[in-house]
Image (tube, rainbow, N blue to C red; front, side, top):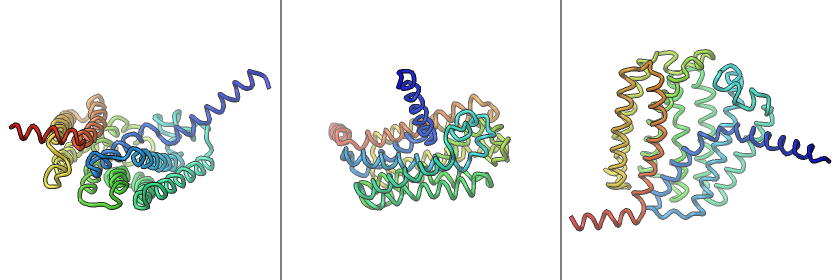
Length: 314
């Protein structure tokens, strides 16, 4: 075998790996893992076991990758039509056959369920699997192509990772993880509708009834503001009455919330401005990342100790 043929074979192998990697929509997964990790830090009071964290996040990654791969298979018809996806998704490009993608998704889910069941606990495995089922049956199959409420109700699938993280640490659930679930649930509509405002024409071309397509930009911007006004005060429930987060998280959540509301208000004033929609969308990602980071920082023993010493001095 010549050096040229070996090089070509390696390039082909790398392309295959890249294609399957792209099936999992890897840009979406880190945000799911951040909410999982934040829940674990709060549940463990800042004392997460590194191995447990690694295993849980790996299981969550595999489950999310399976769900996104199944979504690519189901939505291959509209992916062929949408400008945003036709030249980026492996199935429309002919790089991966649907039947091979299905086998890939099944293997990913089997690995996720086995890993979480054996090395974490059964509840976390069942919750991760329920996220896949909800995402595919409720959002992708039932709601996405039939209701403007698709992302509202379907967003529950993306809110399950905090439950997985909490269950991984405690083996159960309680009020705090359900508040975390609701924070992500209410954050999802303003996050996704800001994106939908940016690519409204793409959704209209394939008759997907996203809110901007059916109700228009003004109504969508109003709804973005409404959900933002709901999620910001809800994020403070972790401080009172639940008491699982403290003043450091409160300051971070307050500042981020004020900026988020300001962004949503600006978009309401100019709902047709795609640059404002883009800015709101990007900030919504930053908001969730920094909010979860605030939860982690606040839960660390060194942070709690510093706050207690400051209170004593005052």
